[in-house]
Length: 447
Image (tube, rainbow, N blue to C red; front, side, top):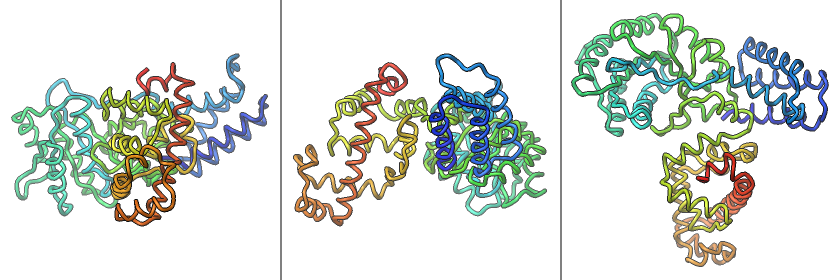
């Protein structure tokens, strides 16, 4: 996520730290590099211009705090202004005092609107203890209704579909009464998209909005389209009066132009971000946490929340003990991978850890299901002694393990290499936790 932008910004800050006492020229040079990094990340030019101006005014006029070096003060200002740019505070879903709360989902075809509707339903059920219902108003795209029904079945969420030939606005209106009969307190309406903005699509969405008077009108946009996403949001907002935005495919966005521009340009808050294909991969958008990620400072709070949602207290303590005591063998490796896999892609999780988030090649630590099953077979083909003492595994043992697991010796070598890298990283993590046990790292380990 935003890897290209993060690396460039961290390089600028590293140069600032080495400068010692800063002059106005030093700040100008640094901010020019920040400006170029943002423009290369496809951030809106006017947004960049205003952002840099605000930072410069504060950096040159600010009283340098006694507890901070000048470079730290500049970084602090950038962090604060980046948070403002992203929206300052989390913007939650507005829940109507009168049931049901109606959420209208809009967007172009291919933005992930249907799957995002299902993800939002799951989020509201888990986090807000609501009983959501999905409404299929995309009657044009082949299999769109069926897709929503399949997702609803997977999540055990009620799905409302209209009658043959019924218009979307009529379907949406009928869904309200159905929701009340089923005791559903949130209605999420999935509307039709197009490959581009046109009058037919806009008129239809307006008709649905007029028919149901939604509490929330959320625009779903593909973060990877950069400024096109911002322009689309501006067009939709001029007709629909959006209440918020959901950015999808953020995990694949190395630049960050849409995320950094859309709030400033449209004036509408980003409420959620999609960071994967699973129905659980929808995150509430916290501007300060996102600013920390962009600046390579990690995101411990989100990591803590993911751990708490996926692991019970006893398992958290077991992980704490293993990491802090640097006792990390293949039994631990397999157990922890099984637990961590529930939390999301490993490279994303490691990127939330301060100190580790600035390390390159975190994608080396990603595990898809196919790779996980292959690694699991290899580990289970080891003897108990080999699992407990990985250093015992020499060339002949590798051949035996490969044959026993039905894999090539190259697969065994890859696992051993990845295990060695993870053990080294876990040791660094443990050392950081010991040093900072009373701070945010301590919270991660339940202290």
